[in-house]
Amino acid sequence: DELLRLQDVHKVYGRSRNAVAALAGVSVGFRRHTFTAVMGPSGSGKSTFLHCAALLDRPTSGSVFLEGQDLTAMNERALTKLRRNRIGFVFQNFNLLPALNVVDNVTLPLRLAGRRPDRRLVNEVIERTGLASRRKHRPGELSGGQQQRVAIARALVTRPVLLFGDEPTGALDTQTALEILGLLREAVDGGEQTAVIVTHDPVAASHADRVVFLVDGQVSAELERPSAEQVA
Ligand code: ADP
Ligand code: ADP
Image: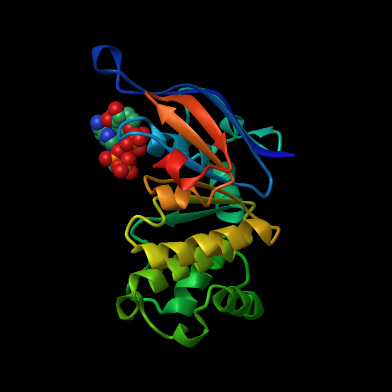
């Protein structure tokens, strides 16, 4: 059961002599309730891939299908609405609002989506991510791992079908990274999310169900259930 598919996606930055083909014909599908890591050397197109998959950026050509619907055919307004309701994002540097406490950071996406903030739902996701004793703390009063937990809670609060991560363990030590990977795994195995992360981290990649390798804007290889050695 395929949730997301990129079909022959090309992304070219710039024009004529300055043109850079960041993605050069990427076709890849993502089954529901799977956890995929995208790896590749610097400049191979990983960020561009993530931005196109999440429709933060439009491909130059090709299609991105979510549940069979071609997102590249949608207007900006419809896309923004879809992103706010169906997609969650986690970043390397957490991207939390420093003036807001944990509850308010986690509640924000519901407000942005125009939904009535449901206290029960917010509390449930805060507890699930292990932040129950940190509700009133601001990001500056939390460790990196705790801040990433807040970011995951914030990404999950709208109950998105897709959870994207851009180096979500990149700023964390190994032990903390493992805890964060455990939360991503729970989101996938718990039933609701399909996760796609870009990572350089072999530990993170070895926790994925599948690793997709990009080289020069193309899929060069795929591995199912990779071992740590295979992704190092
Ligand atoms: P990665 O995330 O794997 O490092 P990127 O997707 O960031 O790769 O970049 C892929 C290629 O596209 C690189 O050659 C990069 O320099 C180029 N690129 C990325 N974004 C832009 C942009 N906004 N304008 C011009 N070139 C870009
Ligand atoms: P990352 O480690 O996330 O791959 P990058 O250095 O590739 O970081 O890119 C950081 C940001 O700069 C991205 O939004 C990317 O699109 C943009 N970018 C990358 N390369 C270029 C470039 N050559 N020209 C303009 N923007 C670029």
